[in-house]
Each structure stands twice: as structure tokens, then as C-alpha cells.
Length: 137
Image (cartoon, rainbow, N blue to C red; front, side, top):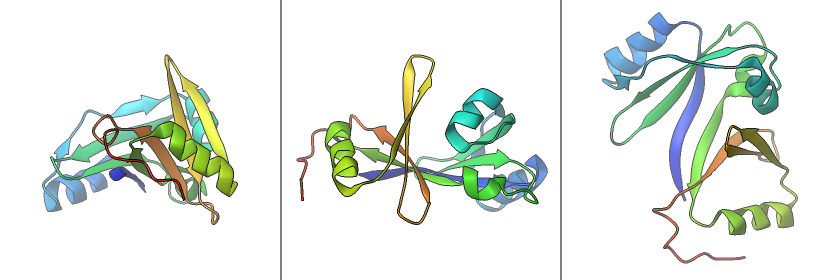
């Protein structure tokens, strides 16, 4: 398993540019908009969200531009983990009573889970990690 990205909320593109580009020296992607229907499915927020990626070869921040005065920050912030054997991981989730949300997005399915304190995790299958032996506790 490896950390793929960290998703956080900033109140403006200018502030996020200043920190993630100016201070951390990360490359910035073009802003993208997540449609309100997908935002509702993933984060239970009925509004469009602007997302900007800041990254280099070692780190990736997914920054959502949103009003921090609303309660949306807690709903959006998440970590994305890559797992080698997705079926094994989902089996473990089921065994431990972790709720799994599978959300259709075009021809893909997004997978999100929450830990027992409500922290949100996006789960992706990694071809790089697939060759590692899976362990089942």
C-alpha cells in the first residue's frame, strides 16, 4: 500500500498557489470542476467543486477550493491509498465492518471508505503493488 495523494481544502486559488507553488515548489495543474452530481455522490455536497493538483515526483496534493466557513472541509478532505489487491482489501473492509462506497464515474468506479472516526479514504488499485504478496489477517 502507498499514499497516492492528500486532498485538502483551501479558500482561494491565490492562497493555494502561494503555499503549494511558492513555498513547496510544486507544479500546478489546470483547475478542474467536479460536477455537483458527482460531488453529491462522493462528499454529500450539492455543489460544483474546483480542484487543483499540486505535485512533483514524490508528493501530490489535491486541493479543493471551497468556502471554509461552511462545514464542507471535513466532508472533502481525504487521503488516497493505492492497494495491490483491491479484492483482498475490500474483503478485509467487509470483514472488519468498514462501509465501502462504490460511486460510478463514467466507465470507472470510485471507491471511498471511512475509518471508525469518520476520516475519508479514497482507494485505488495499483498495478505496481499488485505483484507484492497479499496478507490476510
